Image (tube, rainbow, N blue to C red; front, side, top):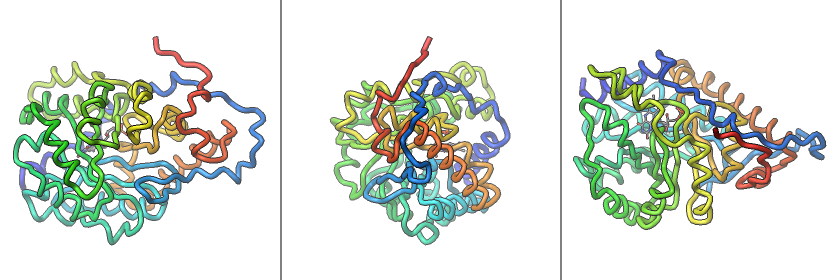
Length: 342
Ligand SMILES: Cc1cc2nc3c(=O)[nH]c(=O)nc-3n(C[C@H](O)[C@H](O)[C@H](O)COP(=O)(O)O)c2cc1C
């Protein structure tokens, strides 16, 4: 088996089997929203639907990037996620597609459009690979195999730095990202993988022509911890397990750019209340990864049950804020009653 396929299987095994890699920092619990005892709404009339990249979603949920590869378990996971995303009308991002660029057998794990003909599908590649083996043609191939609506380029300097085999040359990446964003026929979305994107990063990304950013902040899956589990020297990864910008703080720092970028929140979102708080802080879409992994190893129905739980929680929170539609919560910081950050 190609080493990259083995690494994907290691990640699935560590994330699903070791709960310590989910930091559960509950950063969202520090934010209190204003409960409305008199919501002046019928719960049945609450409409949580949104639009993203020109497509309608039943509510603002994205199943965040996780996997793909030649192994039949990885193919099954992605197919279950795609079937469930289509059935429930939510968006799906696949894991890094670098694997199929070196191993044709991994292609099947990304050929998901027949299982998800209508919903938003997003491709994924590591931006740092533009400094190594990948170029613009690979970005086009990643979009084509998935018939994707957009391409995530992930930035993961912490993960690469604590990996024994990490690719750590992040120099000069901005101009390469700008070249891809300028030429690709679909939008490029920049994300982190759990350490967050800062306002300083946004300045650079805006000048590179990026219009969609997923903050992917800290609080949930810790890639530093995941890599420490694979490393012969776990100390470095453990030390940095909580490094990064907590997701709600990363969103707050994005406020000055709210009119220039479409924001996605992810990293430690674990229920529909966290989703509503993310929207209040300006997000258009909320990404969740780890809670979908174990259900995806089981069946599409198991994934659908988790999506429905998040949706019910999301609608309940909207109702209790007196918000009948998503535009009544998005960017509405006046709904915040109180915050505790120290
Ligand atoms: C098993 C697993 C594999 C992942 N693989 C990728 C990946 O290939 N590319 C990527 O951009 N993010 C990847 N991520 C990161 C997630 O998309 C997300 O940014 C991060 O896990 C935070 O979300 P969470 O706290 O809800 O898990 C992966 C996450 C998990 C749990």
